[in-house]
Length: 103
Image: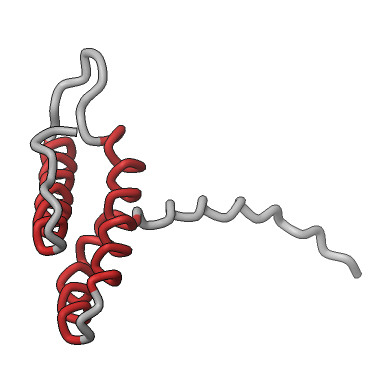
């Protein structure tokens, strides 16, 4: 006997992949310590490139668009962007490179 199969609902959509900016910011203390421990400033320089690339990919989502009112999410994103700026400026300073005031 063949039973008719009940249709299964489609699987839920996969969650979006995590953004690399929070991961890069979270990795910064460990990268900084490893660069100092191994006396390898190139490690810090590579990490700053990763952080800057992640920030460039992220910056379009920071500010509200058009008539959209700022929300708590926008403020959180702006704080994350400011943290990235602090990490980049501090890292460049440690490498002896002056950071521009504005990009």
